[in-house]
Length: 378
Image (cartoon, rainbow, N blue to C red; front, side, top):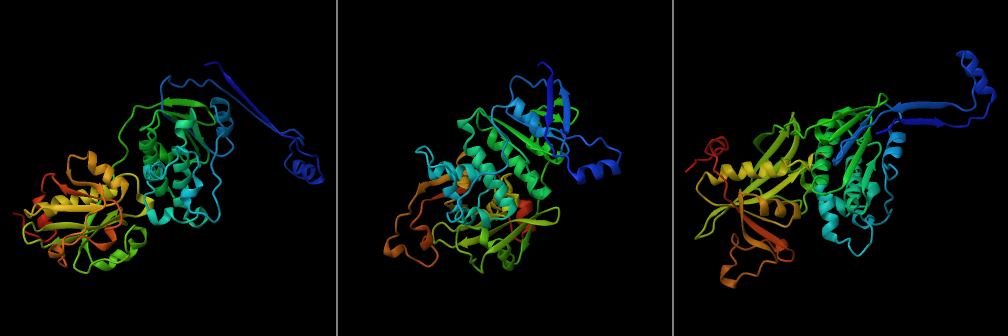
């Protein structure tokens, strides 16, 4: 690629204050300040994710404007009095399924937050919402360039969000470029190339695994549910008889799961009661990993472990996972016969009016985890 010469100039009126400060610091009081860069940028022919990183004022955005086909953006317009879902375009191809898939793909898997206006969301949720808009629009443009990537969120949210975006982009055939002054996202975004500013040095990367997330999963009191309840799509209540578990990462709470015994007269077993991951940690599979670990522990008792869910991300994962078998595809459960309506074996009333799917864990039982959780493996 030929050399790229960037010259940025602007006009400044020569005021008294300008002359005073220029004199104080022995500077020439120019009325046309400018910055100049010259680079030899040679990007790989085939790529999907790129990263331009460097300090403020180093020419990142200007370079991106020259290299790519659309203007970098760091914000979208959202309606003030409508829910987040109504902020997506209204074209016929935009279905509620495509919107919820875009939100889930960037780790924003909290239906209660989907029903709120954008301006009341946390900064982390707003960051994910803007990324979802970008992901949703990927098929409509050759490249998507996001400026100030992760600049408004804390670094944990930035890293987790970057990993979620990487997975979402690589499911498409489009290209995505992030512009940021934070180099800590590189290992999580897993770009195919990195441009370091202001030097313009280009580094191509092999696709490597992101840093590991080591969870500590322990039994907890049901009162811990209060930390997670508002992020779950069902009732905020939890059965007092449930066995409750909390996952932490680096000492910070990240996810919660609970289990109920299902005393069916012919086929007793265990039922997943609640599983929820805090919004800042969604998008990298923490909730799924917690659910799988709990299921492997309880299946070691010799009783089946089942789950009834309506969440599209969890249904989609389990449909492809070798650890789960689909016993009932997404459907509206049929009302039970009057003789079947016991207090334990009937479907929760909240599930009778929505699509749900039932899955059973078929992975390898974990006797060691079973003992740790205070149960006797078979």
